[in-house]
Length: 269
Ligand code: PAF
Image (tube, helix red, strand yellow):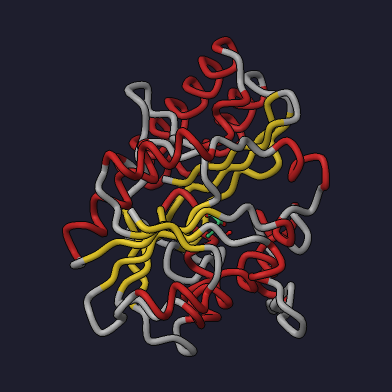
């Protein structure tokens, strides 16, 4: 596996006329990331993974400093999967003079996570735009767990770059908890509570699928979930195409963000 730290050398060494699949990450790789890499391997000739904990997408300095870091373990996992290239940039390489640290989003998009993590997606869009400008891969892969992130990347960056954006399904543990690097920060007791929250989400979704009238049970489920965590930031149903509040049986999706001992977790089904 070739490791690059600068765009210049990466662009010298990689032939982007070949079909290259790109998986951007912030490291502490779990099976969710590994499944993105496996999909990328199937779809492309060569795979490039980036690991960069982007400071501009953290609205809270403490969250940035405490974000898990496991670079040696990550490199081993990537080598085991026979990933061809790893990009490990320093923040000065990403945010060279003149590179925007944020890309503005419209007021309409300041919903769900964007309402609670001010400036977060603006930072995500800036780093993904920078990466996509320099890494002209055929495909870029994102997980559906970050549904709003992929929605905004498609909305704001799809027209600017040629790279095809591929969304891959959320990977869950055997008790339906969505895999996340942040799960590493939780005790087993809290993981069990999160698993019960996930079970409630699936239970609620199945009830609605059986009878759409069960949508009215939103507050009932919210109360159950509130008993299992410190705080529910949002628990909402939205249209899965445009994230508006106008949805039908065919296009609804449940979104949640909650906190366990200061650790923020998200999910959508
Ligand atoms: O989803 C993530 O891990 C990050 O938001 C991303 C897309 C790598 C940008 O920093």
